[in-house]
Amino acid sequence: MGWIVDNIRWILILSGVLTCSMLVMAVAPRYANRVIFGEEISHASHGLVSRSWGAMIFASGLMLIYAAYYAEARLPILLYSIAGKLGFVVLVLSKPHFRKQRAFTMALGDLVIVALLAWYLISAG
Image (cartoon, rainbow, N blue to C red; front, side, top):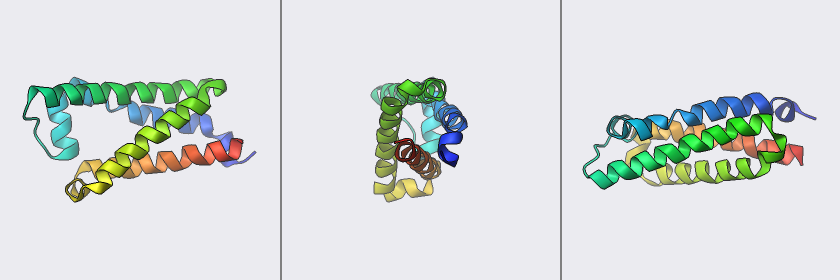
């Protein structure tokens, strides 16, 4: 069936674990914003949005891990993950400032994950 179909479980687990690493944004938003985007949180509302964003990304990572074990759930989870990751990629690439930050490396990593997930969806039919 092809390399991607044969290895999708490990790809989903690895990409899920990497995505779950954004829990740091929910737990320590000031630190995460400084490290990832090179910016300080200046208002309480920014911290709230960062925490919420980190929690949602963490949940997305958990869903990818879930999809590794439950093939019947893969299509909606992969489509959701592709949409979210592409959104992040577009936002980071649209701002030249972020191309010099760790966010750029993360966006490239998300782009690789998107390519793998799309490849799987096409290959699996």
